[in-house]
Length: 169
Image (cartoon, rainbow, N blue to C red; front, side):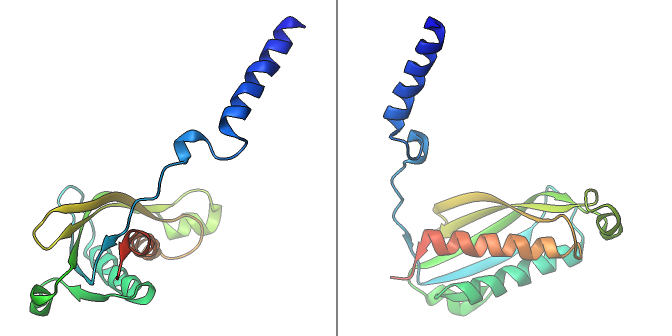
């Protein structure tokens, strides 16, 4: 009985410390947003991983489409000379770090096997190359849909990261 009372006391102590809300590790102050007037998206690199050409193109095109759709700043493509004149330009570099090409047929039959996933390292820099933000994002298609749907999943996550981390003002 004494041991049970000690356990309850210890648990009560931890609940009172945490205040019944978020754990202490989750109560971080939100970072201030990075000021950006425009984004230039560099071509997707896949030096470490063998990535089929259609996936590389789909990653790039879906990323640009999602950034234009979800955010209020102008999006430039790699090589666009007009971006060199923009003050407050943020450059987005992407490197594929992992790729597993699944099977659409296996997903249709089993809905458990055949998942496709792409892991991409996203790095936001200023125009001088100073790193502002880095994050690994994963695009997946697990159940139904074409393998290229994983590229759209990644693009949505990257656009959301930009929206959360960058400010147009």
